[in-house]
Every structure is written in structure tokens, then in C-alpha cells.
Length: 419
Image (cartoon, rainbow, N blue to C red; front, top):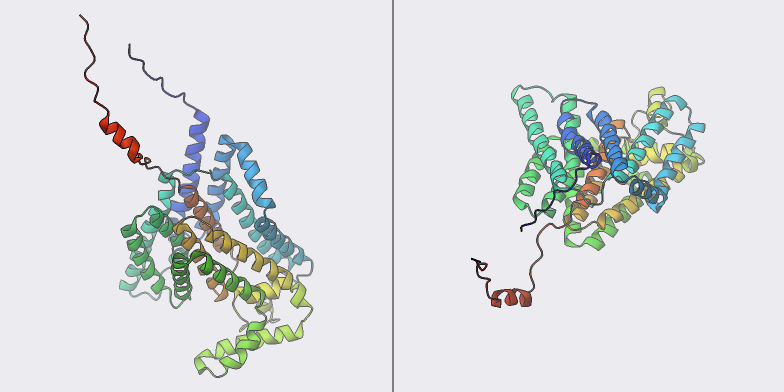
């Protein structure tokens, strides 16, 4: 008598959690790069909604694991450093001359950090490949769509594509690193090559806006980590953290050099002299900073010259001082080192993403605006999802002795028949 296996009992709560996770991750990986090309507020709206859906799915499926993971991340060394940086930014509101706009900027930073911590804790230990495939699919389709929009703008002989397209291209570029890492980790070399080609063309269209060089830095970091993971990761982490920590030395080292450059570099020379004067005139604020959001407001009110350096390095030191810069440098160092410990191609992609983001900020692009903070949060969550999707699903190979035994074993004949 043949026994039929009874189907597994349905669990509506588990099915609902899986659906919510797929929708939430789809908003981050698929909808964000596409909608960012047509809406300037796509990142600000989609990232919080996506993280909330991921958290709800985690609370339905495994609430205990979610809380334990969240506690572990918060109490880890990088987590405590990041929370300390946010706390110092909030404390700087006490001596900031512009408390209202500074509070808004501090809340944007705190919101991005909280969403990142919640999202990392909500992602499962094992991510379905069907979900992670959305990372490469969304970035590839968005890259082709963005390139088409740029070509249409050129054919119409307009000065520049719409602002939403320019911001969307920036989001597509930084989100390309987890997409490329996922494709390479799944040994889809031709797909990765095609995506890299389109991303390279997009990066060339952003040369005047200062995004081409950071993407090139990211590509160099990707190749270096691929060639020598440990040494390249340590070197890149030390360079990034060192530049953040020793940034006040930059104007004194570069100011004599930029004077010898042609007139086209006069703006750079002026920015270096302004930075050096700021350090000489306010040595106390070199420790505490002038308070959050004082660079932009100071330029608007005449406290700072308009030619002051437009750089994350100058902004961090001017607003948060040595304490904030040291926390940012430590957080950046441990983040890059952690990215270098991810498996396979993810290490190269993670270090390249951090290198690109840091180079963008150091060269004056992407200040701490809400859309950029939300984009970086989404990129970090994608790398975590890609890392969780690295479990092998191939059938293990049969050992040779067992395989030989199976071949030697006589085949069973048909079952005997009874009269």
C-alpha cells in the first residue's frame, strides 16, 4: 500500500512575513533606483517604508531573533561609535548659532542611523535568491533607463537633464556596487560586464559634477581588494580614516603647492587659505566645532566666505570638531574593515562602495542631505542582503568510493508478481 506524504501545513503568518519582506526589499532594490529618476523625493519616501515593512516581517516571523540582533548591533563597537557620533551631533545644538536648522539636520542623520540599524536587524540570516536578484535587476534597468533619458536630453539639445534625473543617476551609480558584487558572486560574468559597461557610460556623463573620479577610485579599490583582500582593505581603511582625522593639516600642506598651479586652480588655492585662516582664528572650536549646520548658514550670513571648501572633511571639522571627526574616522575605519571580511566578491564591492561614497564627500559632492543619507542606508542594507544570499543551493558531490559502490550494486529488478 503506497503512503502519500501529507502536505506541509500552511502558516498564514509566515506567508505574510515573506510577502512583506519581498515588498519591502523590492522598494529598496527595485523601485528606488527607478523612481529616483523621475522623483526627487523617492529615496526619502521609499527607504523608511521599505525598512518598516522589513521590521514588521521580522517581528511576525522571529521577534526574538530581531531583538537579539538589534541589541548585538547597537552594543557592538561600530554601533556604539555611530551612536556616539549622532549623540555628539545632537549635543552640538547647544552651541550652534542656528539651532532650528541644525536640529533638522541632526534629526536627518539620526533617522538614517536608526533606519540602518533596524534594517540590518530585520534582514534574515538566509535571504532568498529571488529577492536578492532584485538588486541587480533594479540597478540594471534603472541604468539603461537613465542612459536613455540622458540621450533624449542631448538629442533635444537641452542644457542638462532634469534635476530628478541627475539625482537619480547619482543613486544608480552608488547602488551599482552591491549589484555587481551579487552578479559576480553568482558567477554571472557577462551580466556583470554588461552592467559595468552601462554604469561606466553613466559615470562619464557626470564628469562635470564630480562623480566620475570617485567612481574611478571605487573601481581601483575594487581591483585592489580582488587582488589582495587583506592588504588592500587595511590600506584603504587607513587612508580614509587618516584623511578624516588629519584633515586640518590639508590646507597647510596644499596651500603652498596650489599657488604654483595655473589660474584655473585659483578657487582651490583660495579655499585652502580660507580653511587655514579658520583654524588659526578659532583654535578652541577645533576641538568642539562651531555646531551643526554652521557651514551653510555661515556662508549665507557672511560668517564664512562663499569660497570656503565644499567638502565633507571641512564640514565635519568645522561643525563637529575633533570629537566628531575622530568618531567619524573610527566608524569609517571599522566599516571598511568589516566590508573587507565579507565573502567572495562582496568584499571588493563593499570596499569600493565605501571608497566611492567617501571620495564623493571629500570632493564636495553629496553633503549630508536626507536623500543621500537614505541612499547610503539602502546600499548598506543591500550588501547585508547580498551577504545573506550567499548560501550554496547546489547538490553536494557524491564521494568517489560511494559513487563506485553505487555503480557496482546490481539494479533491482521488477517487483515479483503474485498470482
